[in-house]
Image: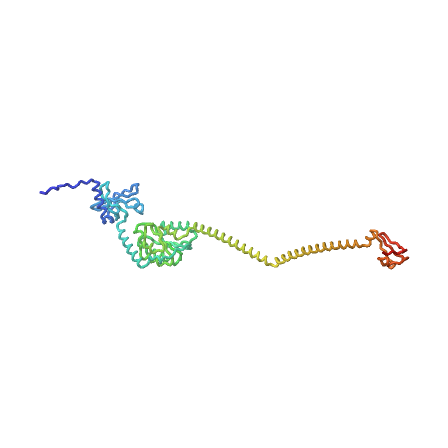
Length: 407
């Protein structure tokens, strides 16, 4: 008979046991990163944005939850009955006491094999140097002609044309139609690239299509398409699918755009930016021209001033001034000389006036002269009974010398 244990094992609460199992599951590295295959059922997509569903096979089922941030990043959601590969990790929902798969990625059955083929082709072409950055060609800033390789009936073409018309309506657009999905698509894309390059000779080519599943986009993972892109002599911009879609064509292209609309934006300048740039350029040119004109005017004025200083006319004007100054000085000198002469004449006149016989006569004196006109200056000149002529202020008369007296 078995012996009973001396001590019973401790009792666990439901929470403690659930937490213990949760820790065991979450610490298992195999359960932290796995893909699970199953058929979808019981899909629930509440207003919270989270996605709840179950995947099952013939013998078991597994509850799954995908949080809304991962749901929002997906371009499609599964529906009832779809066969899926679900990626995530295993955990326990403690409130329900059930383990479940916390999903972060979904893909249809078979997509995994295509993705592996994509990775193998990408690695091989990358090793050949087809994706090397130094091989990439620059996109022209102001293209005169844009080539578009896409389906003529797809929404991608309308988006591209609308974007080009809005941003840069002056550019010429040439379209090379081609299938972008199905078995005939790779050959059609290659042919369209060759024709548009040699016949239209565009400055840049846009290779594009709208979104879809990996199978829908598989023509752009074709090796021939990648090599045709590399072989073009003009740069190629790809805009295939949505932002999260990457194809071999994207790596081979000179520039990858997340969408067809973005491809058109990368291929064209914005006319608003061009007009703004031209306006700024015009303002700069006007300021520079005004500055140059001001400098030339200042230089002209300086040269004119220097020429005026050294011109004959300037010398003549200075000589005129000098002549005027000489004339002024001469007039002053003449006036001064005349004044001095007038003073001298006045003095002489005064002296002459004082020596004028008439003046002497006017003072009561008389001039006595002999018959021969000799003025008598001395008593010794005359003889007794000599007739003399006496001249006074108002006339003359004769006198006879009756006697002589000498001192």
